[in-house]
Amino acid sequence: SSQVAPLKTGDTTFSTTDIAGNKTRTIAAWTRRDGRVWFFKATGPTAAIEKEKPNFVKFVESVRF
Image (cartoon, rainbow, N blue to C red; front, side):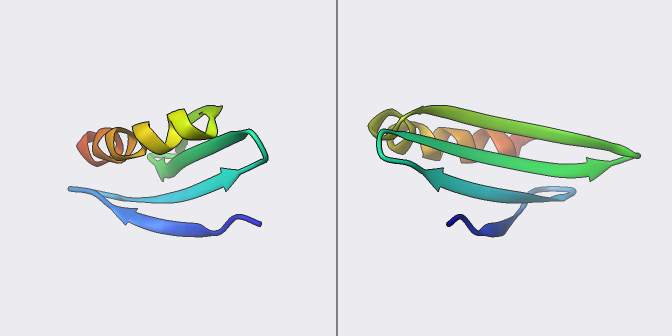
């Protein structure tokens, strides 16, 4: 099962999740802003997503509205 965790950025808080299957993994972050949902995700082989997760988190932390 996956869990949802908050990720605070400069001006908002994203909800995040990390879902791992047998061979693939998905990481995602989303938030609501001005009546819209902003959603970012990365999906791929488990090892590749593990390597890229720090970059994904940095990207989400850089988002400004």
